[in-house]
Amino acid sequence: MTETSFLDPQVTKAAGMALKEQHPPPAGVSATMPIINRIADFHADMTAWRHHIHENPETAFEEFQTSDFVAEKLTGFGIEVHRGIAGTGLVGVLHGKGGPNGRSIGLRADMDALNMDEGNTFAHASKVPGKMHGCGHDGHTTMLLGAARYLAETRNFSGTVNFIFQPAEEGAGGGRRMVEEGLFKRFPCDMVFGMHNWPDLPPGEMVVKEGPIMAGADQFEIRVAGKGGHAALPHHAIDPVVIAAHIVTATQTVVSRNVSPIESGVISITQIHAGSAYNVIPQEVIMRGTVRALSHEVRDQLENGLRRIVETLPAAFGSSATLTYRRGYPPTVNHAGAPTNLAARVAAELVGADKVHDNVGPSMGAEDFAFMLQERPGCYVWMGQGGAALGCMLHNPSYDFNDEILPLGTSYWARLVETALPAAA
Ligand code: NI
Image (cartoon, rainbow, N blue to C red; front, side, top):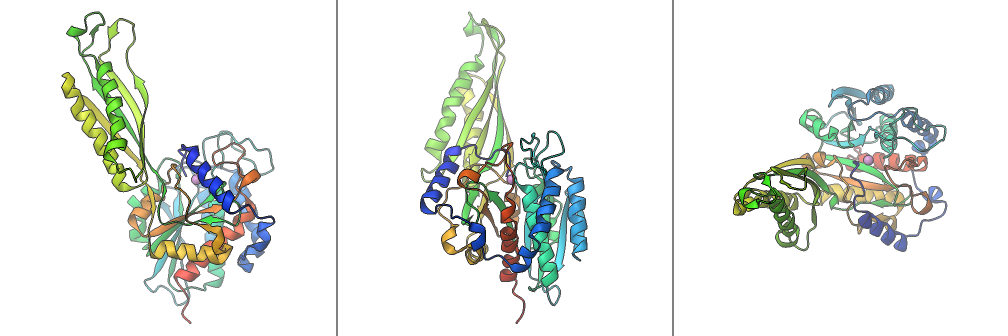
């Protein structure tokens, strides 16, 4: 999840509170998890891998050591490795019993860290000043490696698993680049799945829901043209400040008047820059801001509404303005039907149906797994790892991935494959 996580803490707080009311964190959760025994056997190995990655954080498209580490492990498990997809990205390909049969599944983990200082002092804290695994991608990488090890040993499935290790999730769009570089053409996937650890949720609980789970996040810049002049002689000027004020007001109608009240979206103008003197009408006003939406349709509506106002309203004042709209990550929208049903079924088998939640509001943070879900049917789930006192938020300097959930997340991946691609009887 990107640095835009939890921009609206009320949403996540409300979701967390609702969950805690319904399902108080159970004591000794780890003892009740029906994880796969063989995976539990190498919990210590996975913990060591996770700590190694945590100690050596690397950020967007510079995950050189991490990519080497993953490739070395996959090769050691006997898995075919394809490197250099989106730079440091790589894909491991494993066939089940009977070899390839045209059926396939993709499992994706992100490998990158954040540009921030770690506040922890434990033994596996970051050795790299200014870089930290503050979002738990070290744990995501480890769980997918664990699943690769187990599935390579057991091959209790038929068809092909593609283990997708992507770079640069945190804002730089490594997932998008992998898709653009032909990820799904080179490695066909009938369905693709993603997972994020979730500090708001206790270990042993999961969120699996169809539809939007993370928001789309875009940025824009508006340049309002004026005609500068003396502030005491406004009739000789065209004042872009007044026009900008009308644009700010008019944009408030896009969400409130153009978008259905049942849907949600945000347009926030967060910067206004103009002027340099008390008595000079400036030539230009520059405004910037962000757009958030939970569906592709609302996202289009917000961009179109903003464009309509910026490109037509200034004409009423005898001027003009331009809009530069930069699309960031699209909304992460889980596919209804088979992919989400499969994820929910596997999750329920692992943690119990009462611990799998589908009634939680989406996060207004963004996630570039969204690009993969635009290409292939799939589902992105949240895996509880904190709750109550343990729930240090993502991107916080004191955050750490909870090693207790490594066997559970790994078992989820393994069972997803074995359930989606059952071995022939
Ligand atoms: Ni993340």
